[in-house]
Image: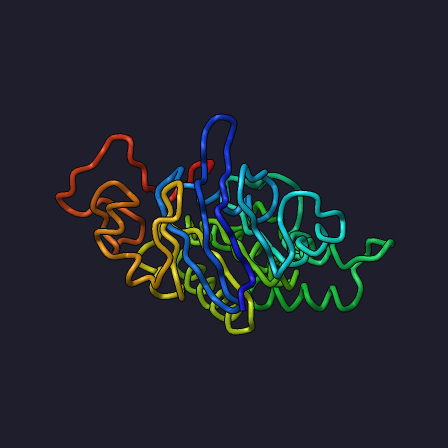
Amino acid sequence: MSLLSCENVHVNYGPVRALTGASFTLDTGRICGLIGMNGSGKSTLFKAIMGVVPMHAGSITLDGQPVGGNRGKSAHHHRAGLVSYVPQSEEIDWTFPISVREVVSMGRYRNLGITRRLRAADRAAVDEALARVELTDLADRQIGALSGGQRKRAFVARAIAQGAQLLLLDEPFAGVDKRSEAMLMQVIKQLRDEGATVLVSTHDLATLRQFADEALLLRGEILMHDTPEKVLAPENLVRAFGMEVDAGASVATAAPGAATSGTTTISSAEGKN
């Protein structure tokens, strides 16, 4: 059964077209990798799904509820509980004085009553989420004091505590240690097995086959939506990156001997769209 459906989605930033005619569906209990070079529209697609950027044309539905247009508060609250977003590290102010437990507790805020206090069930959900990413012992530490991998695990724990059906993970493996990478992949698979749907933006082509059930190839539009094996075929990567790419690299890089363009950037630091 489809949880997410995008139909002919167009997004503009002023006169610049960031996303053109994006159409695809994601079923419940699937992991989909989202790959493409910087500026290909990956972050824009996430923002459109969350309803934080307007669509120039097209439609998006989440669990049968429309995103965009006049939804009203009830649909907004429905979406807020349905979707959880794990941002890129550079989008977060790590100097803000907040503990790991407080970050994870944010996943429960939509459930709070007028007292705005965590109830026993909320605290239990937070404790369980911390345990799943092995951060229980660091729960009272300031988020800015953690390593890159631990920070990512904290935000994934927030998504777990929320209990969202759709998780949007923007470059979760960038800048993390191998232990955190392995743990994140394990947790993502567990969430999939529990019925969650996960859309993961990544430049790490080498690990895509290890965790993804399917993959979307993006370059301002969706070039292909298929299994990772088919999407990562050399001819498809040339279409997406404008040159030959080593699909076995831990970060998308030019294949040995490939001609490169000075304007092509495929590092792990994602551009604004």
